[in-house]
Image (cartoon, rainbow, N blue to C red; front, side, top):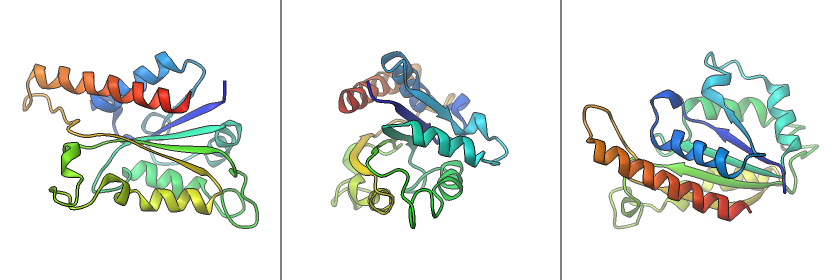
Length: 183
């Protein structure tokens, strides 16, 4: 079994329904995977670069798991990327991540159909991922695609319990698709 590293970029997993459920399913179905929850590890945004780079070096497969915020990573994940993917490590004179596989696993509040040229977002989720694809290319990573689930918003007091159960069911399906992709 390859070494799998999951980087969770949700800014507050304690308040998450979808991303927490996805991570729980991944932990159950990929018991040897290392799941690094950035919000718990670095609530002060002070990233331990050496620890993060060491985790990346051990991995054969890297999964970036996050909710899309304004068409990109949450702030903590962007900080992680900026701090950890340094010249001489991830790109440039040395590319220590070359050949590792990268999967993007993301959730959106908008439904999947919104991510079409004629939808509310005017672009596909793949088009919004060009920066991730280029990051992979620059760093010698094999970009393996995007697992995306939309309509993954649950706000207590605003949504119903049925809405919550639907989000959890979709999160389980999302995790199943991701597990199938990496196995």
